Structure formats: C-alpha cells, structure tokens
Image 1 (tube, rainbow, N blue to C red):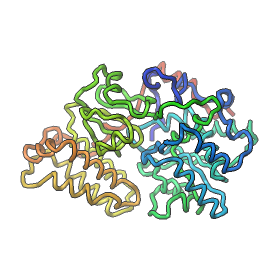
Image 2 (tube, rainbow, N blue to C red):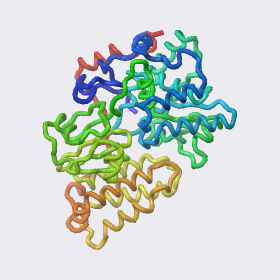
Image 3 (cartoon, helix red, strand yellow):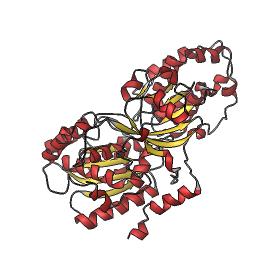
Image 4 (cartoon, rainbow, N blue to C red):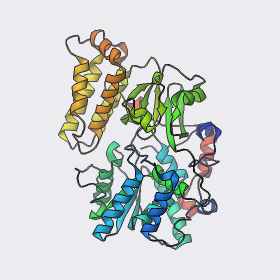
Length: 454
C-alpha cells in the first residue's frame, strides 16, 4: 500500500459548493486536538455516561438512523452496535471496538485521507461507540505507515489532555492484502498477526478479538457518527465520501449527497450530463453499469440495477474501453489477491479470469452467456470472505446490461480483449494520486510529523 496521497487542492471537496461535513472548510489542513475540540469535538465523551445512555443518544440522532457501514457491505450501523452491546451484556464482558481503515480496494483512498487528515473525527467516533458497547479496548486498524503516524500523534494528544481515560487506544497495521479489511480477517489479524478471513458463524459480534464480542466499523462510518453528535450538528441529507476516477478524470475525493443523479455529477465533472460512459461502481466489488441507465448514486439506486455502491468508488470507463476486458482485469486481480485459503474461491477466480481473458477470440461453439450465468448462480456464499460474491455480482451486471456485447464476443471476438496484457492486467485500475509540487509541499507542511509533535 503506497504512502503517497498528494492531489491538486481542488480535487478534494464537497459537492457543488455545499458546506462540507467530514472534509471541513480546508480539506488539506490536518486536525489538531485543540482545533477539533474548539469545533465541538469529543463533547459526548467529556463526562461519564452509562453505555445505555450513550447508545440511546446514538439511536436518537436523526442523522444516524439510516447510517450504513461505509466499508462496502452497507450493513445498518445501529444493528451492529445493538448486537455487540447485547452480546457483551449477556456475557457480562467488556467488548472490543475496531476502526477499520485497511482499505485494500485499489480504486479508493477515502479511508487513508481520513486517518491522515481527520484522525480526531475517527477517534471521537471510536470512543463514542466504545462507550456505547462498554469496550475495554479500542483499535485503529490502519493501511500504511503514514496513517499510523497520524493516528499515533492524535492518540498522544488525547492522552496528554484527557489523562488517558476511557478504553485502551491501540493501533494495528493491516497486512497489504485485499482481504485484510474483511471483518473476520481484522479480528484474526489483531489476535494472530495474520489477516485471513474466518468461517462464519460465529461472527465478530459474537466471538471477536480475544474471544469477546467485537464491533468492527469502517473509519468513515465512525467519522459520520462523531460529526452527527456534535452540539452544533443539524440534520441534513445523508452524505458519503466518493473516490472518483477514470476516463479523462484525475482521481479526486468528493463528499456527495446520497442519491445524487449520475448525470448531475458528470455535468459538474465533465460538462456533459450524458456521456457514453460505463462505470465500474463500488470499486472492484460493485459491478459495471452504463451511465445511460441514469442511476442515482446510492445503495438503493444501484441495487435496482443489480450493482452495489460498495466503498463509494466510481471509476468511469472511456466509451472505447471494452467492459468484458475490464471484467477480466477485475477477476484477474481477485485470482491474484484472494486469501489463498478456500479451494472454491481459488479455482473459480482462476477459471473465470482465464475464461474472460480468452474472450478476444470468437468461440461460436461456447455459449458465453450460459457459462457466465452458471458461475453467477453457483459462486455466492462459497468462500470464507466475500470474493466469490463480488465476482458473481460482476458477472450478473455483465449479463444484465451487456448481453449484446457478450454475444458479439462469442461470435466475432474483440480486438481490445485480444490485445490485453496477459499478466498484471489490473494495474491500470489502481489509483496512485499525484499532484503538483506546490500542492505536495503544502500537504507536507500541514501533515502530522510524529517526531516534531513529540
């Protein structure tokens, strides 16, 4: 995982000039403890409250009623909170909470941004949910050394000013693998140092870190919780951080209202509300859909198209780019980067990657549609992690939206697919954002330096 996170200043911003939430008025200005407290941070944990009182406050916050996890699975956050609180209470045990910032998704960098520039938002949310579920330990699970330094500095600031009250705050650096952020892999990594998914059940809310109920929430989810519970917080539209990249678009981080029409987003980004793009949504895990479907950028809007918003990444594909070739790239990534522990996942991703990579040559005697349909039905639920489910979803979006493209590949072939590189073919989909030297210097000037801070 690269430590590089340098972008032109105008490429991290809120949507359409609205007042930003997580990003703040100056997205490149790193939080300090004093500045964060002056803005109303850490209010909910400033005085002792019972876990039931804190949980009630979270439940009654209108901004959080429909909050879904921002890590990709989009599970209702309040359901997870209540499940861990109930399990810990029934066992009469202190729970564990984890801020998950592993971010193994190649097309996303929102979590790394938050950990480096908004660490107090993440820690505030982590301490709030820790209080709600009576946690004795709270972990921040980070993707890289730069995030680790930023979080360590922020924890030092909290300890110095608050006397170290509350749960133990600990940092765990994730292994640089795609599945390291899967919640059972997070639990195993903290317990053993090896980030591999575990069979389910039991789930972490039942048996997690150290054998106790464990709440694993994405760092963006925690940041929204902290923001919603500030004293001056006012109800507003649900928002999320979207990593946007692709055709003629440099990578950027946007704070979007949930449900913004894709045409409005593209109008602002390109000046054209209906370019003939296709979109790889949700990073590698949400499928491919055409912009011409005029979808709303939301969980429900994409679900109606058989796709998923996932971690909020949107990668727009040039009209000349073959969607079958992109699908082959994604499955080749899975074949190379799965956990290497479930035989079904290993064999299926290898087979599908090779099958799609061979779609450049006509195969009139092979029913491509039938073969892809069979895999899309057989794969879901077949592995310890969700990689087979992600592959199946990708195939279903191809079948639903690109049946004519599939038929053309079967009978005519495809020059773009035939010319695709045989190895490391997904690397063009990975984001390594770089900005002008002046912007990089400003980033360095405003970022946390652990040695100087101490």
